[in-house]
Amino acid sequence: MLEFRTCRMILERRPPPELLSLVIPCYNEEAVLPVLRQELAAFLKKLTVKVEIVLVDDGSRDRTLELLLQWCREDPSVRVLGLARNFGHQNAATAGLDAASGDAVILIDADLQDPLDVIPEMLAKYEEGYDVVYGQRLSRSGESWFKLFTASMFYKVMRTFVHPDLPADTGDFRLISRRCLDAVCSMHEMHRFLRGMITWAGFAQTPVRYHRNARVAGISKYPLIKMIRFAWNAIIAFSPLPLRISLAFGLISSFIGGLYGCYAIFRAVVFHDTVPGWTTQIVLTSLLGGAVLISNGILGEYVSKIFEECKGRPLYIVATRTNFPARVSS
Image (cartoon, one colour):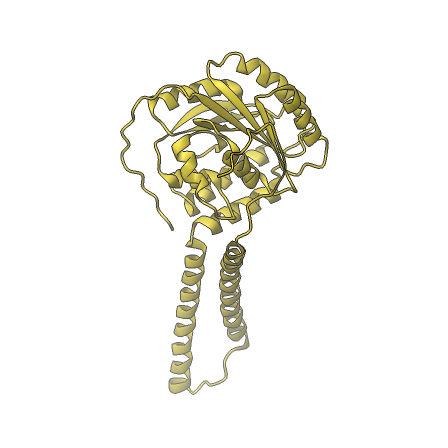
């Protein structure tokens, strides 16, 4: 397993960011957007820093993009990126992070489960010198025991396979300094696990703890199947441990097969019993065949990821870009 060890950081106080960017990926959030807009308008009046809002439509099939464009026409501090299709939450978040121009950037979902009132505490930690301030959940309202159980298992798997120090009960809700963000944006791997990539960057990190709310509207975009797929992609992208497990399984199977081979030779030489038992033969064949198939399957997953990375395709394609400053050609 890959291990990352961060060195001891010396914190230096810094002034508040001249510009704070809020990056909000959206996918089929038509029901949420009116509430999000209202809550943001009330909350931003409390902040003393200048704020830009970067909203990313991840190929929504409802009226999400239409509502976002209407919002940015009425508010010049709102920028909208419309992706050409659904590229997935991590790539949509990456698009927003790439487009953000703030000295500090906060990544937050549109469903308001992560409360806006935590942001001032994040900014205070930023001023203390931390480059990453992640939200850590003390409780999760409105979620079933099954959802809580699978989420707990997800973090255990991530800590085992991806990063032993990856904090439990955290999502992508976090503040990132500009220098940390520049380091993360320089990573172009296609299969992205942003919270692991940010941890890998190695800057000073600290949590702020909060109670997570229930969704204000709509349904979760991360059902069990998506969570399993997300966890598997993160494991394959960040750790060779599955390959090593398959190697260990193969070695153990070979060792067992070698022992049985010695036993068979001993029986043939001493007892002249040259007719192998049918049950034993089937068991060993199944065991070795299963080990080979599992190992080949895991190896195939890594080969497929290498194949996709070698294509060099962009992580996302922007179809609509609204309210962003004009780019200066070099």
